[in-house]
Image (cartoon, rainbow, N blue to C red; front, side, top):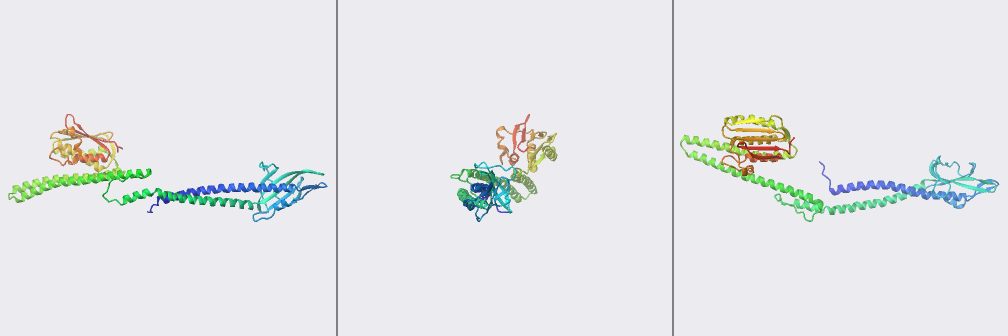
Amino acid sequence: MDKPGSLRGRLIRRLALLLTVILLVSSMSAYWSARHAADTAYDRTLLASARAISDGLYAVEGTLSANVPYIALDTFAYDSAGRIYYQVIGPGGELVSGYEDLPAAPPGAQRTNDYPALATFYDGEYRHQGVRVVSFLQPVSEPGFTGMVEIRVAETQGARERMARDLLYGTLWRMGLLAFSALLLVWLAVSAALRPLDALRRAVAERASDDLQPLPDTGLPRELLPLVNALNQFNHRLRGLFERQSQFIADASHELRTPLAALKARIELGLRAQEPEVWHSTLQQAAQNTDRLTHLANQLLSLARIESGARAIAEGGAMRLDLSQLARELGLALAPLAHARGIALALEAEHSVWIRGEPTLLNELLCNLVDNALAHTPEGGNVVLRVLAPGVLEVQDDGPGIPEDEHERVFERFYRRRAQGSGLGLAIVGEICRAHQAAISLHQGQPQGLLVRVEFSGLGG
């Protein structure tokens, strides 16, 4: 994968792209403004030349002639950018003076309102070149001659284009320099603004691997405070996770150390005996202790699996499951155990109840609830596994129940109400409920016993 670019570089590139677009738009606007300015300036010159020619018109014996003054001829002089042509047309359309075939005004051309004159400006083509033409009408009243004379003056577009280019290049040069200066200033400003972020990076990189203390937020810009707060919250959750793991390891070590020591002492005591009956009794007790150790180890492994299952659910790995079907399968699996203990195990789940969850953890939850109910129900009692819509699971037994002041403590790890048991059954149930965002509550059974209710609301489907 490509390495991501820096935030500074990304900002500069986007700003440069934006400035380029602005520069292009401004260039087009500057060109049209420059061309309009050039047209205005040169149109005024064309009109002045036409008026100078009109001043030299005279009639001799009824014939119109044109005496072009020196100032008008000077205006038509060659230059490096273009050339100027003129034409004088009499009232009858005859050529009086100047070049032939200058283009006439196109149909519908409007007279200009910018000058107090009968003048029309238009674009045309003459001698395979684009020209700008002014058509100026001048009334002439001389002895023996009266009429309206048309004077056309045309200029090639080179001078206008050169003036427009000069204006455009000057504008582009200044705007380019301004854009470069703006990018440089932005680069410096962004570098200065990112210094606190770089200092924060160094503070995190220089920390020890076991240092999860909150990061200091004094002197930081307001925009960095949400990031620092998020990191501190993450550190807090991570520290809590490490503390729970450490506590779990310590508790597990303590819980395993005692039965293992007792098992070892019992076996050593049996080895010293000489009677076969003592050996047999020792082996029986060792087998029972081994079963309890195996059960405790399985429950400890279940607690460890809950962490990975909770991460899978948080990452969107929950599946759509039929809670009634899960309860039905578990009831069939535990029915022989209930029958062997003389307990009636009933299932009340007539319709499908769909929830979202992790199937292994939900089976563990059902198994622990039903196994706990069977363990506390006397022979001849009843255990009811009930599934209700929407997403409610209930397990009810006929046992002695749990006092109300202990309803919260029974979900703590290794909490025992009596000497038997590992104290992990309901703790596992509570962890699985938290992983599924489900609410668990204990209630007094009717007429006696305990009712455990689990409500799947956060991930119901």
